[in-house]
Length: 533
Image (cartoon, rainbow, N blue to C red; front, side, top):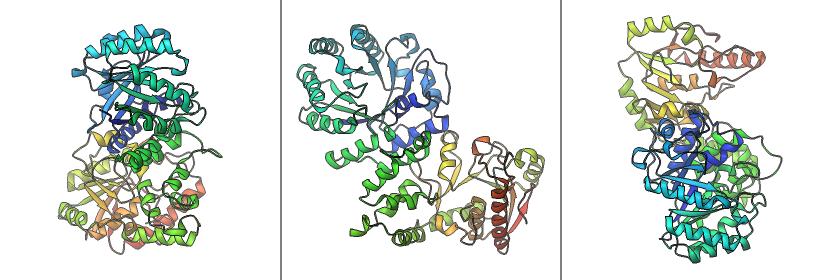
């Protein structure tokens, strides 16, 4: 007893802001990062029979689509739950827990439906689920109504009963009043939860008070949050703040960086940057006790994961932390790039894997579709080792994926999760959702210092090939940039839009860098390109 469990409900409560359409890749990426962060419980969405199955959305008509969306994921030690708004999902759409991918179901209901809803909770419990009774708008309960609810809960004995402050009305006095009613009268084996909203900016403050009071009760506690506090209206208690507090005050070991990576690539882009208020930059600054301009400097590099940003900020010393000096952070940045990771073992294994093989480097340009006959003829003649760059091709299939862009990683999270045999060669600026990449290479070593676009992935991969002692590589799908209103990529999700002038500048800079690299390696283009070679 007296476990404290952190529950993330981003994929359910956060769905109010985008009609639950996160996109399949983001659903998978968010799931993987929350699980790898060590969050105890993840709520993966609503079960609602009024909706159809949509693999891009975290709202599903029953338990079967849950497996379709998340079934290939490694849940590790995290409990996986869904939510039902009582009356919106019939029991016939809920498979027994032994046949379902869910461990538990949370049921939300208003107080006038408490008797029917608790009977429904009992039926779900009979199906084998851990059941959570979620008291919507808990501040509307009179004491006698709460005691009646407690009587019903003691008969059903759900996993937990949660106070849901739906409209963000709670301050600490009424929070503790409801907690004490529940603690005094609930069966001691039933946990108590708290789900806060931020209408009064009290979600996080109330959570701290709930944990402090709950710790002395001896009960199991469940505390809810969402990434970045995302949710309808004023939003929720931010799960990254809760995790930070639990680490500091209760000895938990949540990986904050994984939560921040999920925010950076999947959540922050959902909303315009506010002129003031809680945001990722200022959280990272406060988390590292430093001036926010240090964070801005590093994030504006656009080559660093949040994990790397935190690692650099942790090198700030003493009084320098709060006195911003650009020369100082620039020095730390370049020192970090200089060491990055020791990739000698990865290079050794890559050399062994590629030696004696012709190499085809495959870019994501539209020419791999338009001129696929050239590629197919080459594949038949040479049987090369295929390394794709920041995308997973359908045809030809890749043997390895070179990954240098964290956002491209997220775009392909769902496909990658199903391709366990695809070896990933990742640069050190990309933070993996879980475990390690097949190979990890030092990002700074691969930068082309003389190029205007020094982190161009084609140029970086060519530097890898040079380091592996290859004298010649074949290339396809590196089309260059055609400018405004043109299709540059074979996959529309990858599309960036550049003006004609921007495209010409990119092509010029990359062409110049390519010509210099060709002093060390021969590059044979199989498909048409705009680069001046």
